[in-house]
Image: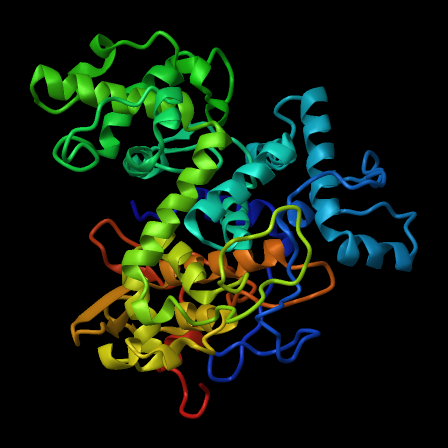
Length: 473
């Protein structure tokens, strides 16, 4: 369930328009924004319909004559126009660049780096069927009592709101706009109402059907290979349910683990429901909300659940559909749940280590009352002491046990959380910044025997204590 999707890194490199950098002396957020102290109960974030990616109501810049559409601007722009497009219209400019990249690729196939073409395709797919996606986000979040801004930001970070079909994703076999795997799909489907189950062809319930030994992400592999063989020249990232039409149990059973005929039939029906329907945002968006809700309920300290919530009233910005949750739009516990989805439950212990929390402190609601998004990003990035022997970050969990993780994972997940916030922040405001330097998040280099050749951990991070400074809370 918990993986770092390769897509996170890839899109971040391909379209860095919304990335930021900035750190304080002790590793905490250095407030460079227009809001020195944000009102987190009423933050400057948009309603789903306001921040959903869509083409602007004004014409795009004419980028047909620029040499490099990924970064250049027309030389005819005045200084004021440059400021307008690189600040107030920054998000529109990203879409305009994507549109121009795809135009050039259609005229001269192969003339542009495939990564840019794929990322541009994602951007332009993401602005399609906007109203349906908005409705699905509100439906999923209200069913699961979560802030809609969190779900929108998470979907943007996973897929740019594009249907990505099925990708191998390191054996996770993620699918669709929500980048779910078959295990997550199964857990959602089991809780869906009967009408939804009928629509997705869901088999009759059986105890343990959504866990090993019956189900694993590996079961999707033969379906994925079948789809690859039927792409007919279409890029793999455009694999859709139509490329899996006609697949039979006999085509994939040879790749299934041993089991009874009933087991094999059930496996086939579960995976077939997944590959046929996981590309549909009508199902996958509410399914993503369900998965994040399960993480929030079971992995986030219970003391965190009821802080950063409205005791009366709610988010004051008038939105198309009123949210039913009483959580702040950027509730840090929900952001932490999304971090866990991408990097695993150990992330909670990283946060606790950085904040110098024991289990008693983590169980105290006052610990989390003013633990806001920028504090979460700092904890994810700076948590853990660098170990020169292993090139890893060493921490102590809430039970006093040592563990470690790579700086690369730490860097990626803090950037993920920062971007979830950035995607829903209104233009002109700067609430949260990711903390990687100009070199970004990179993996260290090891030889074939596992010996470190070159560390990508910045010197400042290597020297850090891995815990918050006294008096900085």
